[in-house]
Image (cartoon, rainbow, N blue to C red):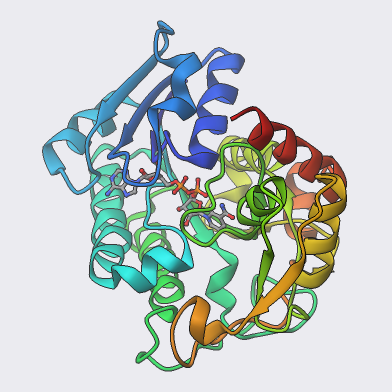
Length: 320
Ligand SMILES: NC(=O)c1ccc[n+]([C@@H]2O[C@H](COP(=O)([O-])OP(=O)(O)OC[C@H]3O[C@@H](n4cnc5c(N)ncnc54)[C@H](O)[C@@H]3O)[C@@H](O)[C@H]2O)c1
């Protein structure tokens, strides 16, 4: 199979590229290296079945040629990370809405199956446990730029479903919950790599807010298997799936676990959201997925618990 991965030099995309190459597929990546890096795909760059294009998905000509060449499209390219969204909302909105619309328009032109990466942020402030795919989206004011990420990804979902319903374009959508593993960068506000690098430097581990907010964490390799299974499964077409971890943990507990796994002497400190991000910043209290739907359809399961994931991230950050 010939697979086009947009954002394939990013954290998740690089693991997905490796997995498709390992399976014997041919991979084309288009990535503008805005948050991704060639280091992530270093081991693939000279592989005969791997092709890298350093360009933006907003470049119609480049995307047109690649879409015509490939059999399926996995669309991961996006402005990711709360910090990035707050710092450059205009670019983020443009990439996430116009970029996805172009991907879908060209996929439809060539009738290519398309996977769209969405996010648990789409649920907004809905703290119901666990969150089911049909649950409500609850957002704060548009005055707060952080909500634009959730809104753009929700618009991506609406667009993809509209292409499915009106043009019969085969699409599948997954809402990824916090995905972690080596290669993820802490630069844009991702909590695990940020805590791990603070712990390894024995600097204060900085928890935003009071730390009682909870999350789940999934190993990137599990997410990649989930994405590939959904792309391969015809019955997934036109559907939305949660992919995420099942172990709910407070951010305070996460900081303590990182500290222990890294054998660090870091103190754990709390920083108000207003200082970490912006005045009036709103966070979700709990975010736990119901992953029954993807389990039932493709037999998805999480194979790494949090300590095993943290050990991998610590080992990776130590050798960097
Ligand atoms: N990591 C998570 O926890 C998580 C959670 C929910 C959803 N997601 C989604 O998964 C996808 C991949 O995220 P990730 O964690 O690997 O982040 P990432 O930042 O590592 O990957 C995004 C990639 O897209 C590239 N990119 C950005 N704008 C582009 C453009 N205009 N043209 C071409 N390439 C562009 C970046 O350079 C990067 O390589 C994203 O769509 C993100 O919204 C990730």
